[in-house]
Image (cartoon, rainbow, N blue to C red; front, side, top):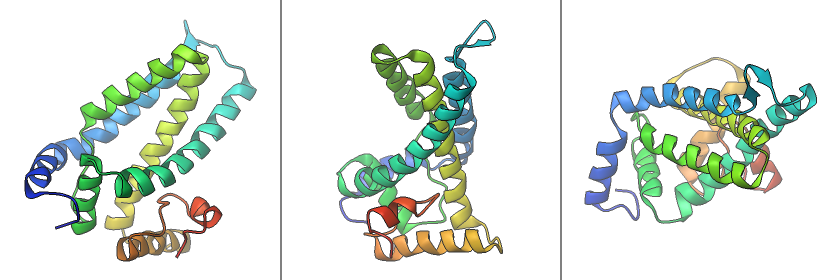
Length: 190
């Protein structure tokens, strides 16, 4: 059993996160969230953002995801005691299991974050940045699944897979999943 997770917590987390429906419907739910967030940048079918603003929200959102991925994985999934950490430790114990944060919790949190941020920032830009950040999250989910379940004979993929599997072996290195950029920047690459 992974450190910090009691049997009762593990059973509850497994019940909430391990259904095949929850795992795969999470992708549908997340794509719907991306579409809804991006729609905040439109009124009556017309964009509220210029082409330059769209370009910057696309690049900024995707880059922001890679940084969030690094820090969320390092701190939320490993350092801060929580059900999320316990669920992640289950993943470390059973890396082939199809585990996912319950899709309905994700929806509530992302919608709440959007409304909180759009209260203090431009709602159209907030929606666009969050849409592409969340698109990065979907890419992370798909890549993480592939790293554990696919056997692609591609050098880039094999290097990323090796990077991730070293994290499973050493546990305190290689926090990035979709890229090793931030592991290089913060010197946590094994």
